[in-house]
Image 1 (spheres, rainbow, N blue to C red):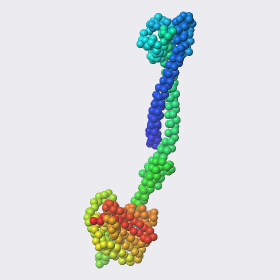
Image 2: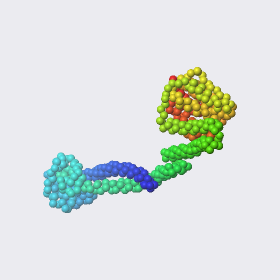
Image 3: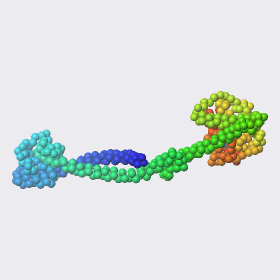
Length: 472
Ligand SMILES: Nc1ncnc2c1ncn2[C@@H]1O[C@H](COP(=O)(O)OP(=O)(O)O)[C@@H](O)[C@H]1O
Ligand SMILES: [Mg+2]
C-alpha cells in the first residue's frame, strides 16, 4: 500500500518531467539540425564557387591546347580530391569532354541539355541540388559555371559534391543531442526522486499514517512536519483538526460520564422512595411528601432530556422558528419573576434595567425565552452569595442588545472559546449536580438561527453575556 502510493506520485512527477525534457530536446534538435545543414551546405557551396577562376584557367588552357589531356585529367583529379567534388567538363554544345573520375569515362561524348546549361551559356553560375538527371545514385550539390575564353563562353564545368556527407554531419549532431537528453533524463530522475521523496512523499506518508492512527482512536497522535511550504501548512491544519477531534472526543467522554451521573442520581432516589412505599417502610400519610420529591426529580430528568433533544434538533436544523413580533421587556420581566425564589435564596442583589416600557422585537418568543432562561440561570448559579446580577435591554441603531451580568470569578481566558461547546463545563467540581453544559450551546444555536450574535465579556468586573435582536 505504502510502496504503491509512493510510486504513483513519483511516476506522475517523473512522467511530467520526462515529457518536458523530451519536448525541449526535440525542439532544439530540430533547430540545431536545420542550422547545421544550412551551415554545411553554404560552406560547401562557397568552397566550390571559390574554385571558379582556377577552373576557368585550367579548362581554358586545355581548350586552347596549352595543356595535354593527360595533365588536364590529373589536374581535374586533384581538384576532385581537394574539394571532394566530381568535375565534369562540357563544351559549348553540351558534349562531355572530360571527367575527374575513371568509372565515368563512358560519359565522354554524351550531350548535356537542360535549362541550367542554357543559363550557363549566357554566362551565369548555377547552383542546384539533386542527382543530376539520374547521373548519380545519391543527391548532390551541383555548381555549374561557364568557361570564358576571351570574353566568350566556350563551355562549362560542373562540380558535384555529395550531400550525404552533410547528412552524416547532422546525424552526428543528432546523436550528441539525444545522448545529452538521455543524460539529462537520468540526472533529473535522480534529483526528482531525492526531492520529491524528501519534500512530498515522506511528509505525506507521515500525515497519512497519523490520519490512520487517529481514525483507529489514537487521538494523541500528531504530525511532525516542519517545512514552511504548503505541506507544512497542511500538517499544521491537520494537527489543528486532530486537536479539535481530541477535544470533541473528550467532550463526548465527559458528557457520557455526566449524563450517566445526572440520570442515575434521580433514578436512584425515585426508585428508593417507590420501593419504600411498596414495602411499607414509608407510611401512607407521608406518601404525598415523597411523591412530590419524586415528581420534582422526574421534572428534572424531563428537562435534561428535552435539552438534549432541543440541541440535537437545533443542530440538525430541524427546528423552524415561529417568527413573530413580541415585547422583549415583558418577556424579561416574566422570566425574572420566575427566578424570584432562587434570587431570594442566595440574597442576590438583582437589577432589571429597561429603558422603555415596551420594546417590540422580531423573533421566536419561546426560543428567546429559552435563551434568557439559560443566561439568567447561569448568572444566578455562578454569582456568589449576596452578589450582583442585572439584566438590561437597550436599543442601538435598529437592534436591541440584551445583556445578563453577574459579578464573581471570571471565566478563565483559555476556557472562554470552549464555553459554547456542547457539554463543556469550566469547573466540573463547582457545578456538580448542576447543569449539563448544554445551556450555552442551545442559546448560541438559537441566536445563530435568528441571524443575530451572542458574545461574552469576562474579567475582574464579572461576566456579561450579550445577544442582539432585530427591532420590529
Ligand atoms: N455567568 C457565568 N459566570 C461564570 N461562568 C459561566 C457563566 N455562564 C457560563 N459559565 C461557564 O460556562 C459553562 C457552560 O455553561 P452552560 O452551557 O450554561 O452549562 P451549565 O450551565 O450546564 O454548566 C459553565 O459550566 C460555566 O463554567
Ligand atoms: Mg447553564
